[in-house]
Length: 220
Image (tube, rainbow, N blue to C red; front, side, top):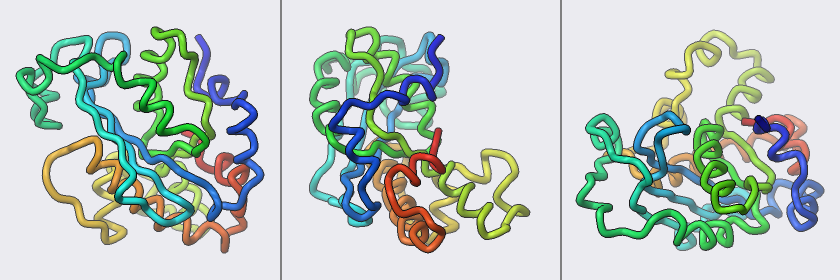
């Protein structure tokens, strides 16, 4: 089976040009998904949210958010997490009807998010099913960037433990980012964008100046 590294090794020409650009001249799309569960073989996407950034500036008016009828049943455990009930999505179209719009929203941008490998696993499963191939944008995981920054500063004691210490909301609290309400794909994307914004301000001083540099330290 093709791994994540192989999936993102060959960006198309338009995306390949992004690697040469400095961090503050690039479009980023920060994404998040809500799911029926965490098993990519049997679970599916129930909502998809994204917000654009230009360099370190979050474009609050340029967002993408869709709830879809999932291909598998919602469970009581997943409803507790994201608050989306079967009745909320029963009459909605499937992800098939929104995936092209989502790909268009991401076109020409670096895709980022927190613990992004899970979102990518589900997205690429749907893209493969629809014969689109894997998402080939440059990819950056904010958790990986966080770990790299902490490694550079020599702070191992608090930040290299269990993943629970590095979940999105825990890091948001650490960096003074307000979090309200239940999980929501768009709201979580906004939180991740604010976290990424904090990291972008630090990276040039640590020698990370281009998207090529950023992708190297931010692999999912």
